[in-house]
Image 1 (tube, rainbow, N blue to C red):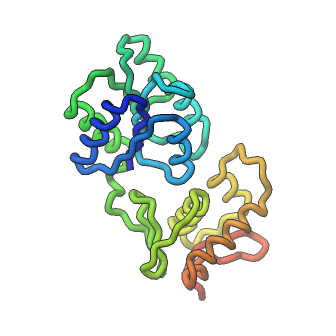
Image 2: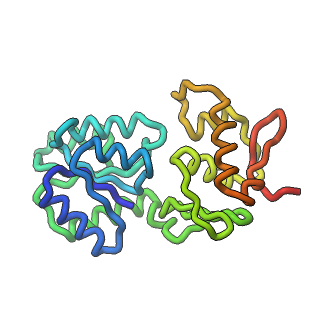
Length: 225
């Protein structure tokens, strides 16, 4: 999934059309608030980010993305009518992975997107399925099924499940899970993990037994003995 934050409808529609026609799944947003709502539900594989926006400028949004543990490594390409060397350097120094000056052509845009996805490794996981028992996770599509049935998870539930299943057999303490899923700057308490594990098990149905409690230590994913 690719997200585009661009307030000019003509450019937004053009880019989304070009991406969809090139085999990508893409969604466009006119305002930072709409973009933030989508980010809270599902993280994309790449973001195309305009600089001149209503509500909040693109550089400020980029700095927010880079300051969060969840989006620190998210590939970002800046789009801007400002094409001077200073503007490009400012964007790249703020954490952008690439910078495209407007106006740009379809071939250049798609080429830059593909190149960045290759560097980030996102395109290599397109067909990847991570499985454990009846649980199947498709990282590229951000989808989970349990015994063949789609499961709707929150962002944190998904990240928690993915971490445990990718490291099946490994025991994680509550503090480790808080650091890896919620980030080092999380100010909540370890009971947050217990609550999310409980709801995760409930949503997974019979496959919920694959998320096991290791008494006095924490949690792990694996086949019940």
